[in-house]
Amino acid sequence: MQLADEIVSVLLPGALRLCSEESEAICYTVRGRSLRLRSIVLSRESLRHLLRDPARAVKIEYLRRDLLRSAIRYDEYRYPRSRVRPRLFGAA
Image: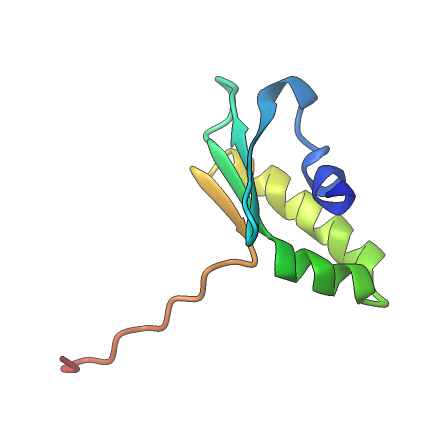
């Protein structure tokens, strides 16, 4: 998908390899000693929503900056980010 390529193009092209184009996600593997990041997972449904969004240019630029920041901090980058609900104290 062209939008996915546009987002990940912020990283060095030699460090990226399209790993899988599943029906639900587009996955890339990342190779590079200077990067902690090892995988990128982009949801196809979220990318389709982004394509139709009137503010997509701004959001794509944000995703590119976020990916760059994440590349040195995290092992995996997901779009959209996983939401983790805080566990309530005493809940079983």
